[in-house]
Structures are given as C-alpha cells and as structure tokens.
Image (cartoon, rainbow, N blue to C red; front, side, top):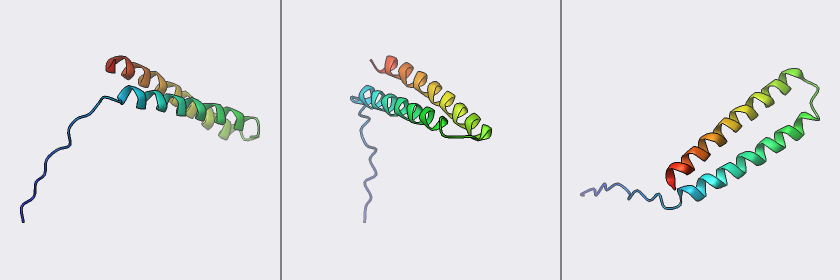
Length: 71
C-alpha cells in the first residue's frame, strides 16, 4: 500500500477576507466584555477583562498589519 503524502497547495487568496472577519469578531468580543464590566463587582475580574481587551486590541493591530501585507 503506497502513501501519496502531497502537501496541500498554499491558497492565500482569501486571507484578507478571513482577517477582516477576525477583526470584526474580536471587536464584537471587546464590546461584549465591556458590557459585562457593568455587572461585575469584583476588582480582580474587572482587571482580567480589561487586560484581555488590551490583548484583543493588540491582536486587531496585528491583523490589520497582516492585511496590509496580504494586499
């Protein structure tokens, strides 16, 4: 039994679209997290949410830079 292990072709034609969708999803997650801040009394939880949103913003910046590279 012979195996034909060929790599899949590298298709990057829709990378910019996928990255834009990731930006939109991440932006939506930031908004939801900020809404949840209104309902928390825990300072620790508040700090965790704010830190996570900061990481999300950094990811968005990276996605935007990657879109620039793709176009």
